[in-house]
Length: 258
Image 1 (cartoon, rainbow, N blue to C red):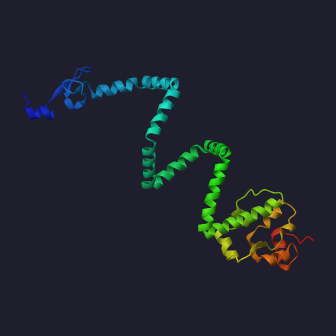
Image 2: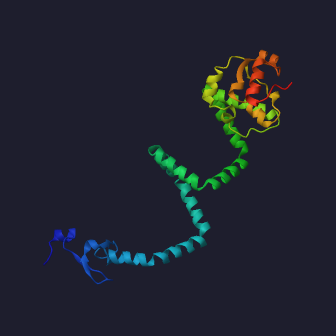
Image 3: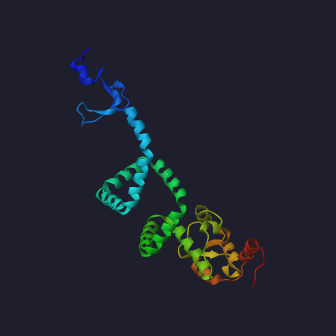
């Protein structure tokens, strides 16, 4: 029975014989091909899938061999393509990060866990080559942050003071400041209170009482710290005080050593 022109254009009732399986099938079972007279592939989709699966391993093997032989050429083409579309790619990535922050953070966590050693080696090598650049960036950031954030300025000052105390005795600060003082920065600042003008961070039991590195670290405990006017701190120096004796016994577990 002949089809109407509308049915022909819409493909209603149209059939085609597959050149491989020799079965007549509906035209919907054939992929489109603009180069063919009827606009369809000569083989049906099922036969195409079977052929694809049968030759998959061979095609993958050829692709690997080609990629290995032309690695430099492929890398150069990719780099050239990236440079041409760099701004578009970066803009798209920024937009994706803004729209899906949780997904991006999870991807970063998964990647960091899988490439922990590689990332550590890369960061170490980068830091070695770019020491001046990193130091300059950190200095500019720290200066701006100190001017805008009083809490950051207080934390930075305390870190520096504790580092100086430990370093001047010939030891190295190997732990985080919070671990050394025995509390968080917010708790430490609350314990110390606002810093008065022209005040020093005083060790009630002076650091001169420490006989080794372990004792020196124990004397950085927050209970041994206080703000003291500069002149009063200089007069006190390393002299014995009742408070100092008590804290020496509490923190070091021994009596004051003259």
